[in-house]
Image 1 (cartoon, rainbow, N blue to C red):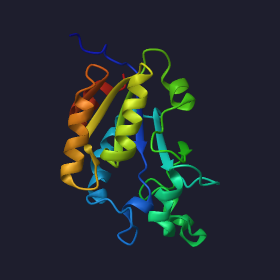
Image 2 (image 1 turned 30 degrees about the vertical axis):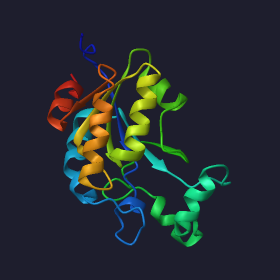
Image 3 (image 1 turned 90 degrees about the horizontal axis):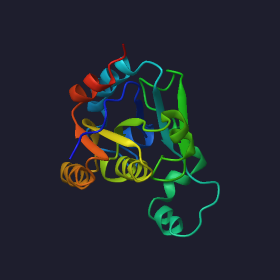
Image 4 (image 1 turned 180 degrees about the vertical axis):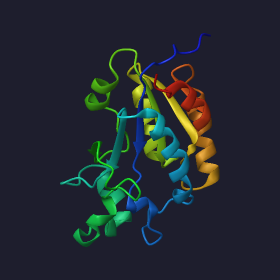
Length: 190
């Protein structure tokens, strides 16, 4: 089995680093969220402008299986909680590309266009067991090379995080599980 070709210009996709996943009062608070600032910032330093921040946003209309989903967490649809869906600090005022989607997977035409043919995504963020895995698998299924920086991701708990990494590792060579340091070697700009 051969490894993916070295990507000279991968795209770093920072998945859903938003207040709704940081705020301890949120029903979606992700343990260890604040610990991700340093490893994600290390990736960003090397990626230059090849970075997209994604945001999970509530849909304008709740249909299908999303109805019972939001019935479990109605407070996230409260207009008074709109600030929860902003990027968390230190990235809120960073500028750059942001991709908003009301779906777990952030993969789609927008990211596909940015990486081009035979492109590589370096994925980090939250939650490993939800939006990260959904994005990674959808991108891999579309033919993208995906590198998940495992130490720059967190799940709803450590067990869920590790199980999601194990599932994604089963998609090799489409998906490679790496550390930030390994991803940095591959994402270093000339």
